[in-house]
Amino acid sequence: MMEPAPVFADGVDHERLTAQLRFILETDKLKRVLRRNLLVDGSRRENDAEHSWQLTLMARLFAEYAPDGTDIDRVTEMLVLHDIVEIDAGDTFLYDPQHAASQSQREHAAAERLYAILPDDQAKHAHELWSEFESRTTPEARFAKAIDRLAPMLANWHTDGGTWVQFGVTKKQVRDKVAIIAEGSAALGSYAAALIDDAERRGYLTGE
Amino acid sequence: MMEPAPVFADGVDHERLTAQLRFILETDKLKRVLRRNLLVDGSRRENDAEHSWQLTLMARLFAEYAPDGTDIDRVTEMLVLHDIVEIDAGDTFLYDPQHAASQSQREHAAAERLYAILPDDQAKHAHELWSEFESRTTPEARFAKAIDRLAPMLANWHTDGGTWVQFGVTKKQVRDKVAIIAEGSAALGSYAAALIDDAERRGYLTGE
Ligand SMILES: [Ca+2]
Image (tube, rainbow over all chains, first blue to last red; front, side, top):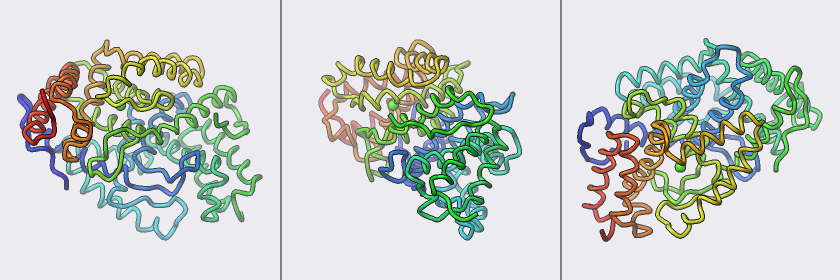
């Protein structure tokens, strides 16, 4: 693990700041975790850090489509942290059932290691936010997950089917993802359904 | 400009959602705006989108170093949007006075075009947040700017001087940036000062 500069700042708890800096240096690796989908211009694969940025932007712009009372600040806090486990666990392709089977175990181990780099109070908070996101037990988590599922659909539609075509994804597989979006946001679920209907018409999706 | 899919979602204001999607597609380009500094592992140059993600992470983790009462949610909202003008204006290297002279004009034109893609209320809000960030008139803007200035210092320190060495940056130039960090956060200003002292000792900075 990369160590922060060996310097002391006046009036700052050195041990605490060092733990925070260690986490920032370690999670810089998120910029090198590649996802399957392309940028919307098709120029290259997207990485997890820039993906996370875009989700926080979408969460703010689409706040009006969240259920009343959803705390959008908490949603964005979740989205900033949600993919950090992939530094250890790697990106798991949404439509790869074999890999997905071991995903949960790998991601839990990653969360244990990575969030523990932070000072205890922040480690606990970050780990709780991630668990909430994964379990979709709150409106915030369900809305965050909806945004996370919608973004690669946009990328796929704008790159002639993208990973849907590349990996022969079926209509049924994509409709399961649409259901998850609808759970977090009726409006975005409705949009995702319309987008998928259009993708079917264009032949981007196979089988049932 | 890339157009959203020509689909209609039930129960959603089509014109409004289309404007929001247009903005998301257009700002996807932020992932392709390259900054001068490298990732902390030195592997490649950083892009503006992943940089923006890291700043929102840092703002949350370092919230305790902001002046009492600073609204960190607003800080992160600012940081998500702050670099979008660089899609048109390009990244202006912090230590390039010639380019910096025309920067303000280019960025204002960029803000005019880009934020106006959004529905009017959101365009106004985004533009105001960006203006606040640039003018550093609030504790939130000063803290956001402090984080934005600190991040490339970390990258430079961890890549054997990075752009300081590459462009022969002077001690005085860097100390001006430290002053901006201290305006936003006494603790982070103190850390940046210690980091720069160490960078001087290592010979990463030249002249006065
Ligand atoms: Ca910046």
